Amino acid sequence: MPPARRRPVALPALSLVLALFFGALGAAPARGDAPLQLPAGEQVVDSADALTVDQENQVKQAVTKLSADENVQLYVVYVRNFDGKSPAAWAQQTQDLSEMSYRDILLAVSVDDHKFYFGSADAIDDFPASDLRSIADSAIAPAVRDGRWEKAALDTAHDLDRTSSHRWIYLLIAVLVVLAILAGIVAALYRRSKRRQADDDAEAAIASDAVLTVDELTSQPIEVLDPWSAEVLTSTDNAVSVSADELALAVEESGDDAVAPFRAALTTAESALAASFRLRRSYDVDAGLGTAERHRLLVEIISMCSDADAALDEQVPAFDRLRDLVTDAGDRLDALADRSARLADRLDDAAEHEAAVTGSSGRAVAQSVAGNVALARELVHFADDSIGQGREAGTEAGGPSTVAAIRSAECALDTAGKLLDALADAELNLALVGEATEGSPVATATVSAAESFIDTRRGAVGTQARIRLSEAERLLDAAERTDGPEEAAASTAAALAHALEALSLSGRDVEAWRVSSDDGGPVLTGVLVDAVVSTGPQSAPTEIGRGGFTIGGRTPGSFGGTETSGRIATGGRH
Image (cartoon, rainbow, N blue to C red; front, side, top):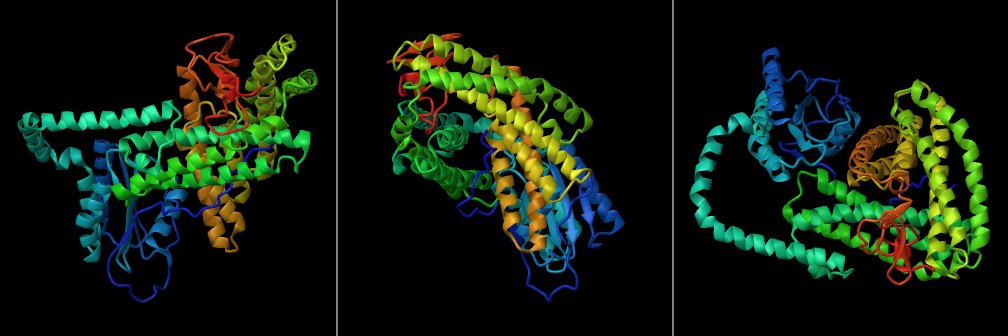
């Protein structure tokens, strides 16, 4: 079975954090404060003894009130200095070590040189970057410059706490809004019309498969580009995964030389995709980005994903000629039946191992394989049904039903094998790491678990989990490449934190999918992808269009970009 895919990173990343500092640089401090893993439940840490007991209590009360009023966690850290690191680098490592995430904001102050960092671990909808920068400029910078350490924290908490500190402003705004409604209604309707036109133009372009020019793409507002870029990232990631899976089959059948152009296209697509994930993470978490820069990032993400698609799409005709699924369809179906039988023989023994692994440990690596065997069993049954349908349709020379049956069985058995291999890997990795909770082996095992979980549930997993996984992979690669032990340790710890977050987010996505969807394992695992055309609700295999084939409006995926991966639905592969 093809191993879990590690996305290569070919392009440099943008900065992920907002770093602000004021004051002149002084002499080198006698000692530095390394990035911290903040103690659980503590939001105020004063390792520099910058506050008196009373002042620290006041800050704690302010952050507690802020948490209750706004559901946002403000972490305040005072250190002597940032250990020779930039405020951004020190803060990022602290955020990673402390596993900060959505609605977590860090204020870190270096008292020796009057520098500070202020920013959120992830983007917060109701506290945009412009608001955070305003607080930094008006509240934090003057206080840090003057050495009024408690005021920096108290004013920050006060300004973030809109519920209590701005009631009179809200009342005034409410009055002004009422007075301004009539004056603004015409302008609002005009803007709504323009926005609707922009939305319609973008949706029409997507629906018609039109290729937008750079100018047309750039003209779209952020409100259109933001969700569009997230959707494009997910769909491109899925297409790259399907392409990697079928390329592995082509290598087994034809050898490395025959697939060289397709491997080159896949490598190009993977690199563009990895860079796009990094850009999206910067867009999500960098509080210092202005509107123009955020708009530029979204345009670049969509453009790069389009380039990734194009690299794969260009090779589709040649790839389909190499993997002619019809000429020797009978032999292929026989081989698939043998493979299905071998996987079926592994299921009962695997079930015992899964029970032992998940029952003996609550660690994320162990829990990531919960349900793997049941899902693999469902896919093996689906493959057997597909093989049977392929044999029934075998007399149709070049029929799409035969191609669909073969690809359905191939994808199902590939994924079933991955699920069982992931269980074996988790069992081995847990034995290797023992009771350790950090370090390179633990990070590697956790990143591998996240890769396997997301790859085998890609029909349900959303963009945010994939962004965290891509970042975890990048950090783990960086840790393996660096010669500096401190840098390697920091990257390893950050990779572990991102991998754990990827597992958490993807697990929530899968649970939400199970609640809202009646689809089964083949859709959850990405064995069946959305058909290129819309056919309405169906429950049985149906031929459509010009010799196309779908199963409930979905079709088995093939090597190619987002627009060609589901080409079996339109008779595009026969």
